[in-house]
Image 1: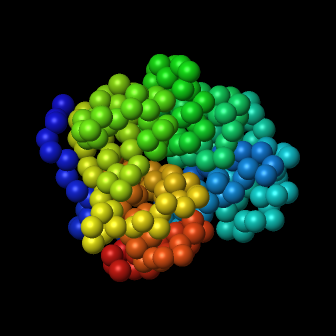
Image 2: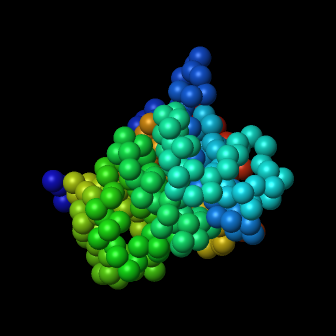
Image 3: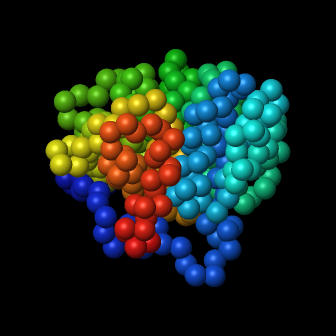
Amino acid sequence: MTDRAPRHIGPGPAMRAALTKSEGAHKYDHGHALVLSGGAGRTGAARLAARGALRIGAGLVTLGVPGAAQLEVAMQVTAIMLRRCEDGAALTALLEDGRLNALCLGPGLSLARARALVPVALAEPARSVLLDADALTAFADDPDALFAALHPRCVLTPHGGEFARLFGAPGDDRVASVRAAARLSGAVVLLKGAETVIAAPDGRAVIASATGRAAAPWLATAGSGDVLAGIITGLLARGIAPLEAAGFGAWLHAEAARRVGPGLIAEDLPEALPGVLRDLEC
C-alpha cells in the first residue's frame, strides 16, 4: 500500500501508448461497452455517455434501454447499437455475451432501475463496471451493501454531493478523502472538481488538474459528467486498467473542453476528442 504524493496526469508516452490502436486490429480487440439507459424522456444522459465511449475508441458501444424508450433512442443513434433491457433478468441474459467487457450505469438511470441493475452488473468480477450518478445515489441509504458487491475492476465517479452521501463530506485534504474512500469501497474512486482526484484501493492517487492556464470552466454544464463517464467506460473497454482509465479520461475530458472553449455544451465534448487524439499522435 502506498501513500506517495499523487502524480498529475498529462500527455506523455504512457497515455499515447494506451490510446493508440494497433494496425490490423478487429473492432472486438478494442472492447464492447454497454451503457444502461433510463426510461422514456430520460435517455439523453446515457446517449451522451455512449457517444463518449465510442469516440474514445471502444470497438463497439451498445445502449441497453427499457422497451418504453426503445423508439426514442433508436431515432437518436446510428453507430451506437441498441438492445432492449427491461430488468435484471434481461441484463443477465445480455451479459451472457462475454464480449461485453465494460458497463456504464448511472447517467439518467433512475434510482429504482439502478437498484435492480447494479447488483447484476457487479456479479462478474472480470468485467469492468463504472458507476455514476443514480447508480451511486441509489445506495446512499446502505452504502455498505454497494461496497460489498464492488470489485477491483470498478470505477466510481461521484461529484461532491454523491461522494458525501456514500463516504461523508470530503475534508480539506481531498486526496486523503478519496484515498480513504477507495480503500473503504475496494474500487477506484474519482472525485470530480477543478482538480479531479482519482485514487485506487492500494493508495495510488493521481490528479487531473483544470486550474490556472489549464482551466476548463465551461465543463460546468449539464451532461458533461455523463460524457466523462462514457469516456472512462470506453477506455475500460479497451483494456486500460481502472486507475489509468479514470485518470486519462479526466484529462481528455478537460482537454476536449479547452479545445471547444466558451459556449461549450455537453454534446460538443465527444466531437472534440478526435482532434485531441490526433494531436497526441494516437
